[in-house]
Image (cartoon, rainbow, N blue to C red; front, side, top):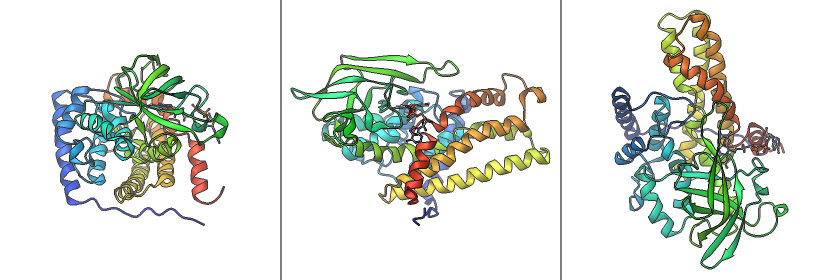
Length: 383
Ligand SMILES: Cc1cc2nc3c(=O)[nH]c(=O)nc-3n(C[C@H](O)[C@H](O)[C@H](O)COP(=O)(O)OP(=O)(O)OC[C@H]3O[C@@H](n4cnc5c(N)ncnc54)[C@H](O)[C@@H]3O)c2cc1C
């Protein structure tokens, strides 16, 4: 039976040094009041903050210098991402662009797209949205119904996307649409387009979440023109592009650290003398975190070596989101706000309440639990 191998990865000295620099920067920013820690893996957006990271060379770190990158290792980037998440920093603006859209454009975009877009992402000035899901198409992306037809010098897209995170502030959306065939032809005839959000014919409508926040949207394309050289990977390779992109979307620490700032606040609140039951529960959660971190850095090492660990990424996301959802529930039991008489507006209370409402979505976004488990079973040769 095939097995998963998660080789241990030792962070190189330059990554260890970088961690100290990033931590110091985040400590200063927090002390200045430029942010308060948030839970949810990048839910707060601050353009100035993203631009500060860009100015320090902490965005697009692995990309060629020619495109605004730093030619640094995946493991150094990993450390920056990990520190931003641990601090609950407001890095949402550039998050999708830097994590997955930029790397896709670097590998599969036209020269014009690379030169025009990548330096802007690396500077923290250009933001992206992911246009995969549609009203009747989420898990089963091969059934997308949005279509593009050939036009003079490019394509014209018509269709509708939903759950499109950050589309209301993004400069571009990468949209998965059908360019030939019919939905029943499944994986053939799909293409990904890089669409300028200012294009005539695009409209964005907010969809409010459980706690009234505006994170995602419905995006409608009404005969929207896209130039020929703004595909990702060329015509008909949309499915292949989506699959490789999801390895980036699923493997990072943002898939197990969403509740980390809450755990830290809970540990602070418990103080140096917790009850044995409280200490045991914190120990259990921290042990799970340490294991997931070890698996996730192993995936970063594989990406660094040019591999595409799609199934391993699915495994880490499934286990990671389980933990992210368990932390709010566990700390609520060992440290209940009302029973302890904690003020409603303390950092712990606020993170606790927000986590309870946010964490439902963790096992849906980026691929549901059932879909991931199907992939893992396939990776193990069980289906
Ligand atoms: C916070 C958040 C942010 C999101 N951001 C984006 C975004 O930016 N861009 C974007 O394109 N999408 C985004 N999504 C959409 C997300 O990717 C989809 O919700 C997800 O893929 C599930 O699709 P669906 O909602 O259509 O559910 P469905 O596919 O209808 O699934 C419903 C249920 O059936 C189960 N199911 C479906 N098929 C199978 C199967 N074959 N076997 C077993 N069980 C199955 C699912 O696991 C799920 O429990 C976001 C979602 C959330 C919650």
